[in-house]
Image (tube, rainbow, N blue to C red; front, side, top):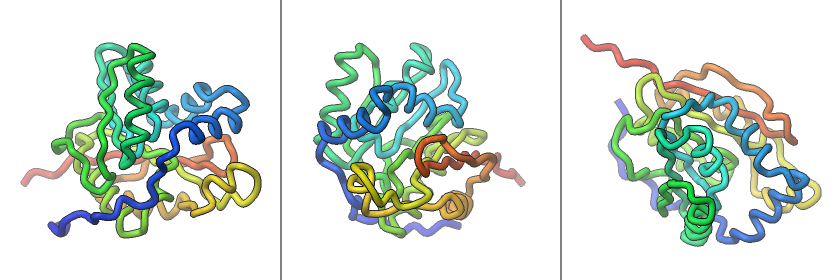
Length: 214
């Protein structure tokens, strides 16, 4: 049984620079950020009509791409601890005329009910959190994904020590085996893992197994 202790009040390292963030992504993807985001989402196998939450959504571009995939019958939400990031994400949604709900929230206390989503994603976010906060985040992702739903986690497997990306993420990385253990300890079952195909990024895909009813 999981502990009922209150979530940490520390959101982790929170980025508050939406314009530089988007500019770095544009440069590193050689002007093809949408193709990069499609690659990030591919392991989740999003389907039309599904619901998804992007945890640590930043400026919202991944959530907006997910909305294009799930279509008008699906719903997509994004949370981030930075009000500046969420404000830019909301502006992007309005410009794109896509219905995506963005909220300011830490990853350790997600403001949605149990089993709400088909898919929960966390991309390039876990390395921002202290270890205890990662545990809390994984438990929350387990809580809000439905039974049989998927949790996708993507992060740097190695420190990026050189160039603009190294400067941008110099605070850390989370190896795939650490993500495996983190999700498994939260009650999720890892079903797939592999390389994203960009730098040292690797993904781990897990599912919430059906609970046995006595």
